[in-house]
Image 1: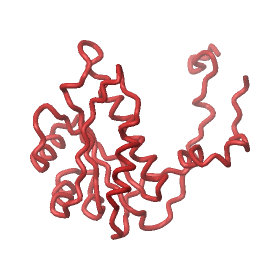
Image 2 (image 1 turned 45 degrees about the vertical axis):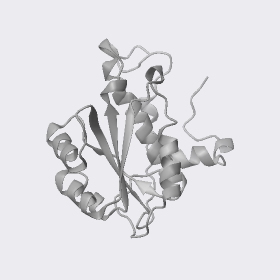
Image 3 (image 1 turned 90 degrees about the vertical axis):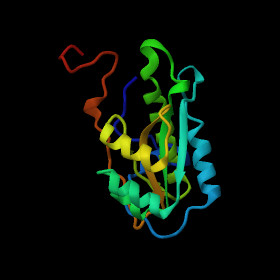
Amino acid sequence: MKIKNAIPDKYKTNEAYMSILSRVSVRRYTDQPVSSDQMSAILHAAMSAPSGVNKQPWEFIVVDNRELLSQLADALPYAKMTADAPVAIVVCGNRERFLDGVDDVLWEQDLSAASENILLAAHAIGLGGVWTCIYPHEERISPVRSILNIPDNLIPFNLIPIGYPEKGHAPMDKWHPERVHQNRCSLLGHA
């Protein structure tokens, strides 16, 4: 098999595939509200993510209160756009559904998969969002926990503001063929 540099034409008409390639991080939103139907669709997609041993260690806090959105924007250094977003989702890990032992860190992968599904679903239905980091920074976790009254068994993982994009955002071409290795890693010169 030879990996091609170009997207095969037969996939360019696949809506799901092209939606993945055209998703961008959106940091500016119009004042148009996001509907409860849209949020329901996004959250269903989030919960369709894979998780280790099907533990589904996630909890989602949907924030649409203007005062709380502003407080979150003030508390988080890279989430200032939250003040202008109509809604945000705080993705949390529930310790009660973490795996044991060495696998207790797999919740991070599970929440990452759910978060990507949020971003892809938002984009697919005409909205935009951006992943902003909370975990593992205690100086971010603590204020979010306080602002949203989050109990100790939940770990705020990230915050994803969501809304209608203010203007068109062109996707970047992130394809780097030199980062694709076939059969063995070629970074050491032993391809």
